Structures are given as structure tokens and as C-alpha cells.
Image (cartoon, rainbow, N blue to C red; front, side, top):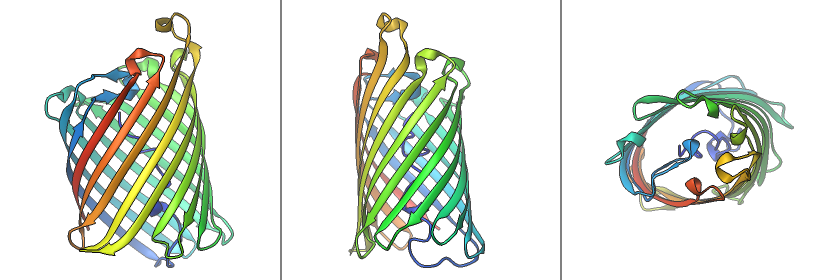
Length: 304
């Protein structure tokens, strides 16, 4: 399931606490609707080690609503729900629907922000219950100056698969991100690291994985308003704990490089067009998941 940017990417700039002006107390809410087109050169479901080696086109739909509450200046509560669907033209057995509910409670102690968060996600594959995912996190964050921001989180994760219980797993992870902003705060570079240790019901599927992330984002004012460019790189080294029967007793290993670029183009005050391009190179000594994949898409989003 291609959810690397849905659940595990929690340190986006929209979640940075108190990076700009002081927030108003009370309630505020916002929503977004998105519709788009996706070309996938190699339809895959990573959680099932399924690679079709066939391309397809898909329609993508997404809706989200979030609520923010500041009962007083230093206490922040955020919650929301989003639902997304990927509907393939030919390979509808890989149609994917994901619903995620999240909550985040934090307190700013001036020198440091302390918070807890929860993400609950359910995924359906071809209209059948596929996976349930829960992630609890405790985090510390600090804005060191107008140019530097850091965040570290300890995560506890639980995954359950409705049709393949051997893949049920629990995991612990520690994640850290450092941001550097330009003086205008319209551009930043983020360097991130995560260490993920997962224990599955089937020992062959238990693994340890370091992840390295690099993001560059920049905003410029042009035709129609603020244009945003973003480039992301991620590298993962997944080492499995137990020998694999299909590899004649050898342990499974994987290296995964993901490169993604997107451009947010303003069409109106609340309307944006976003073309994107993503490339995945997944190398493994297990032939079923030794593949590469290119995803090219374009979406129209409306914020309210």
C-alpha cells in the first residue's frame, strides 16, 4: 500500500507549532476536497509483497476536515479525519480506500513543546477490509530561533491484517527531524531520521529499518498567488530478522529509494492544481519485491 506520505509523514510544515504568528484562542476548522489522475507504471501492494509488473491508470479522490482548539495560549488540540480512494481503470482488485482519524495534544512551555498524538487508519483493498493501523506518539519539539526547528518522537505502532494474520505486527520507532528556514521563512530544508523495529506474527516478516529523509520546499509569489515547490528523498534499509524458506534459509534484505517532486499552482484563492512525479527503486534479494515504480499524477484541490 502506497501510504508513506499518508501516515508516517507526520512532520510536515503544517504541523510545526507556533512557527508563524501567535494563534488565536478558541475553535477553528478547515477542510479540503481533492480529485486527480494517477499513472502507475507498476501496480504494487508493498504490505502483501505483491508486484504486478503491469502499468495502469487510476482516479484519486480525497476529502479531509480538521479542527483546532486553543483553550488558552499555550495549549493546542488538533484533530481531524481524512478519506482517500485510488480507483484503478483495469486492475480494480488493487482499488484502495483509506480512512484516517488523528488527534494531537501539545503544550508549549516556552523553551520546549511537549505533545502526544494518535493516528488510527483503516484500509480496504478491492472493497474488502485489508488493514488496521494505530500509531501513538510522544514528542518533544523546539523552535531554536526564527531559522531552526527540531522535533523528536517516540512511536508505538500496531498493524493487523484481516486476511493475512501472519503479517500482524507491533513496532516501536524513534523519529527525529531538523528544519532550517530561510530568513523569509518561505523556504526550508528538512533532514530526518527514523529507526523502526517491527515484530510480526510470522518471524520471517520481522525487521529493523533505518530511514533517512531529506526535503526541500520553497514558495514564491507569481501568477495567481503563492507557488510551492517541494522535492523529497527517502532511503530505507530493511533487514529481516529470521531466515526465509523461499530464500533457502537466507535472511531477506531490502533497500528502498524514493524520490518525489510536486508543484502547487494557485488557480484561485482556494483552488490549487498540483502535478507530481514519484520514483521508487526497491531492491531486494527476494525477487518478488525487487522492482522499480514510477507514479505521475495531477490533482485539483479546493480548500474551505
